Structures are given as structure tokens and as C-alpha cells.
Image 1 (cartoon, rainbow, N blue to C red):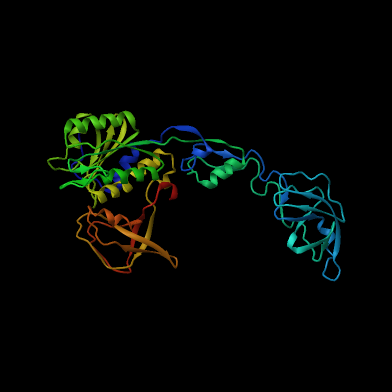
Image 2 (spheres, rainbow, N blue to C red):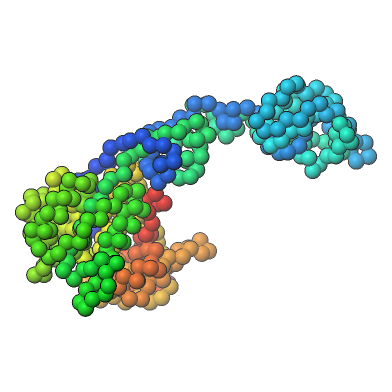
Amino acid sequence: MELHEKPLAVADAQAAILEWVSPVGVERVSLLEAPGRVLAETVVSPHDLPTFDNSAMDGYALVAADTAPASEAAPVRLRLIEHVTAGEVPRQPVLPGQAVRIMTGAPLPEGASAVVMQEHVCREGETLVVTRPVRKGDNIRRRGEDVRAGQTLMMAGEWLTAAHIGVLAAFHRTFVTVRRRPVVAIVATGDELIEADEPPAPGKVVNSNAYALAALVRECGAVPLVLPLVRDDGARIEAAFAEATQAADIIVSSGGVSVGDRDLVKPALARLGLEARFWRVWMKPGKPLLFGRLCGRPCFGLPGNPVSGMVCYHLFVRPALAKMVGLPEAQWRLPEVTATLRQDVRTKADRPTYLRARLSYAAGDWCADVLPGQGSGMLTSMLGANSLVFFPEGKQYGAAGERVPALRLMPPGAA
């Protein structure tokens, strides 16, 4: 397993990863299964929407010209000839001097050129009394007003939301072609780990990384497959990764990739034939990151410190998954904004640094509050973080009011 001797820059590591991942295949799913999936086809309108002129209000369909002389002093009286509700079809046209009681969404009768709101008229038996002029076209939804036949509705690569599903259903689509959800095997290693449902024990910590990674994977539109905890044993680690290659499209491990006596993931992967691309990235937190291909599948070895693992996920695994699920290139990486620091910030980092921060937007500007407790093991510091403020190499101080780059922590579909 040949690896770069020097750590890669973040941008170089991201480019190397994206070069080695490809979109997964497609499948047809029902609309009920489609939210949160990535569209894999172009959808064109087969017909106009609405498909017929209809009323935008509960009121009365009439000939607008009839109402031109109407006033409080000299109201216009029209004969009511029919009552049409939504789902019904008018049985007769509207002629001058006539009106039709009509409900919202009901087809507009032939001859009618406007709908007057029911609040603006009164009735005397079967006579409609109009006291103000009505303009031609008032309160009418025209055929094709929303969409014309042949119009492109959606493009491949769009993240399907409730709005997409509603539009597809409106055009009688019950199935849609989407990108398959990549299966992500999550492998956590370490003798110190216990599961969340086990009682606390001296020297042990909960395997929280697997749960956090699984949640992040779901946010990317992929399927997490959390494998059983693996102890610090080379043979067991090999067996876990071998199982992962049989069950998943991509593998993400947590822990065991640094240089300690119990960091056994790298040698285990080497024995399995990992085609390694790089190990270590010049950044803080998260330097000991491993990436390669195992049996043709992208394989990430994330650091075990909780924050380091999550930051590495956002910077490296997220772009890979976004590409795999078929999102356009503009949505692969975290969106970047420029923000104003709200307080003085000092670090001791000798590398490019990503600081957990809380972004807010007011008066046309992004502001960043860098959160206290920036240690890589302080998991709760991620609770209030919705961004990563970036300090380049050599920068250890930022003054309040200074403008700095910040990466917004958001799922690919929301970017």
C-alpha cells in the first residue's frame, strides 16, 4: 500500500476522492418512495395545467360586459341559470343577462368572461344583483396558466421534495426514475468502545461515531449499514471490511488509522489489497484520514475522535456521496459564504483549521460566532454548529469584525 509521504492539501484530497467515485445506477420507485431521492430523468409536461379554464373563487360566472354600468344606485340584475361545483361540468353556456353559481376549481362555462366573488354581490332568489363593474378575466385560472404542454418540469439531478412529488402527481405520474441509494457500510473499531445500550464501564466510551455517521449518511440520501463493533484484532478487522465489500457501495470506518500501537485498520486494509490513494490531510482537526479503493469500492478511514470524524465526513465523504447519488457538481461540496466574526478568535494550530461556529444572517450579512471548546474530542460542540469557519495555515488570530470564509453544514439536497 503506497501512500503519499506528505499530507495532502484539503482541495487536493477532495479532487482525488471525486476522481475515484462515480454515480450509482438508477431505479424506478413509486412517488411515495421518491422524496429525498435524486431524479434520474428529465420530466416534460404531457399536457397543459390546468387542463381547462376554471374559477379561482367561490362566486358567479358571468359576461363581464354586462356589469359595465353597475353601481350602488343602479345595480345590474342577472338571471341565475345553473350551479356548478368542482368536479362537475357546466351543462349550458352563459348568455348576456345570465350568471352561473360556481365553486373554486369548477370549469368555467362557455360564454363566461369573468367570475365575481360571492362577497361582492347579493342574491334575490334566482337573481344575482351586481353593484360594481367586473373586469374581463377576473378570478379565472386559464388553461395552461401554470404549465404548457411540452414544457420541461424537472431536470435529472434535482433532489425530490414535496413540491416535486405534488407536481408529478398532478401529471398522473405514479412512478419516477431516480438514482439508487448508495449503501454505506460503517465500521467502528476499538477495544475502548461499547454500544449505546450497554451500561457504562471504567475506561469505556460509547460508539457514538457510528450513530452520527449513520445520521449524516441518511442526510445525503444514502443508506447506512452499521456493522457490529470490531475489537482491536487484525483478523477481525479484516473480516469486517471483507463483509463490507460484499454488502455496500462505499465503506466508511471510524478509528484505527493513526500511528498508535492499536491503530490496526491500515495494515488490515493493506492485507486485503486496498488500492490506497492517500493517507493524511494537512488540516485540523482530522489529519489522519485514509482513502482508497477496496474491491473497487471507495473506502474511507476516518479518525476516531468524534469531531475529527464528523469534520472529515463533511469535507470528504459528503462530496463523494453527493456525486454518487447523482447531484450536480455545484452541490457536491459544502456551500461557502463570507462571514463577519462576532468575537476575537485565537488558535494554536499549525495547519489550516476548521472551527465550529454558529452562522446567522441579518441586515444582508452573515455573522459567525465561533463556539467555545474546539477540542477534537468535544462532541457536544457540534450541537450548536451550523458551519465551519476556516483559518488558513499560519493564521492563529481573527479579530472581531474581520471577514472570514465559512462552510455551511447542510445536507446536499438543501445546498
